[in-house]
Image 1 (spheres, one colour):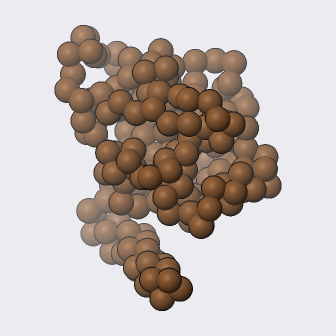
Image 2: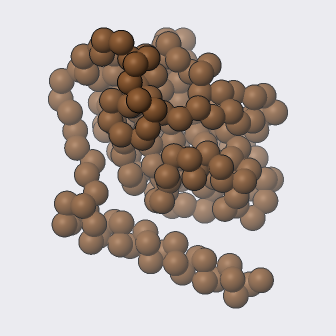
Length: 191
């Protein structure tokens, strides 16, 4: 079992290095910055379901650390930062304080910060609970226990963040850690 975990860790480390160096240097992974506020789309409910920009993301329902069920439908009407992460992921750890700060600043507005923990990659569920307590995370943390939503959203690298507008339309996807500036800039562009 330890050999398997070591092999998985080496593969993940290798993929992280490829993601952070080769792919970004060669322009294969884009983290573009739009500088103009996104226009509201006409008939957003007529858009196809998918993972591309200006598509409606797939439906999901997951349970929070606190045991509350939350579905993607409940997020409609709000601007959403949907972040896929794991406790063992260094870039994920780096961006968590900024996500918490954004959540605290915007929680009384039409903004939702949601962290989807890829629990299927964790040693155990308690690691997630301890991580959230240690870092004083109060935004909703959804537990993807078997990796179904992670697979559905085609997450290959951690962290991956979707910015979804108040009509439930994907406006931006960022692979890799978000700087505080990029996080706030993207959120403020959402209609």
